[in-house]
Amino acid sequence: MMKNITRKLSKIIIESKKPENKSLSRMLLEIIQYSTRLGLSPGEYFGYGFQHKKYKLINILEYLPNSIHFSKHLHTINPTNSRSILYDKLLFKNKLHTKKIPTPRTIGYIGSKYRSEINIDYLTPQSIEKTFLEKNIKEYIIKPANGTQGRGIFHATYNPKKEKKFSVGDQSFDTNDFFYFIEELSEIHKSNDFIIEELVMSPCEIQSISPNAAPNIRIITLRTPDSNINITSASIRLGRKNSITSNAGSGGIIGNIDINHGTIMSCKTSSSSDGEFISHHPDTGHKLSGFTIPYWNRVLDECVKAAQFIDSVNSIGWDVLITDRGPVILEGNDDWGIAPEQLFGRGYLTETNRYLLRQHGLEFPKSTLPKPNLKKIRESIFGIPIKKSSMT
Image (cartoon, one colour):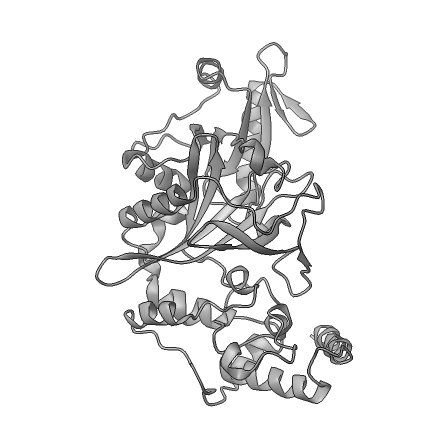
């Protein structure tokens, strides 16, 4: 803990020496005030740029602290007992398939047992090769049915002409060994089922801004008590070289998107407090700001349709990929992270979003700080949040 405190104090001292920033005493006072009164961590303070002189209290109150986002915001809007369909990606895919909402083509699933409630092919050592040949599968993705943040995802290939037809990275397997490999993954990632789905290929114009991995578009929807679906935020995760996913949790670049036009406004190298603003992709040199996402209106339409069908969860972070045929919904997240939506000079608590949240009985400070709450020191100053944070 002392090492963590020393590191954060060193960060404050370094930042105070920059001419565009507030004084050391001012930053220390604000960090203490905002942590005890708002639950804002030092990582968020610097990640959002609050050390800059231009940020006044009225600006800072537009931001939703990570600890409050999970403990109050999502806890109120998304009751715990309503979220199961988003935790089980097989169940989720099955639901969207029945509603004709586009998702990456699902080849099948491998698991400990057949699930009668899922209308997706159950792959066994006896059936997998026939399925792959019939569907002409050469490249595909393996991922856990309950995975998060891009973890446990593998790019794999199938070559029927080889003795060991299944390859994952630099490993090759015959059919039985491939299934043993999946069993090992199940234990590592605590997932009973693994999904086998098509490798999504982006249009050429998108590959220049996200090499190796299809860009992951994040759309936040909010259902109000009258069942209207509203889009409250939009952002994008861009892949780096040697990465098969563009998820921010696996090291991708993050950018914010103008909801009305689908245009990337600005980007940072990561969602952490050390992320730097960039104007061009570091691997391709392609300009990022000003790039317009293809099929943007369809992206929004499909997310709204999906949110209407997943009616047990009010606030969902949708992950969307773009193909030559249009957008496909990868997954929905009930515990989506707030930090990436607030990295670019504007907080989540806009006037419009405040109005929508009030309909769920949620009010947040707007012009004055609330009374101090000493319990929040442990959550923010000492880096022990109520729930996971990408800005500790």
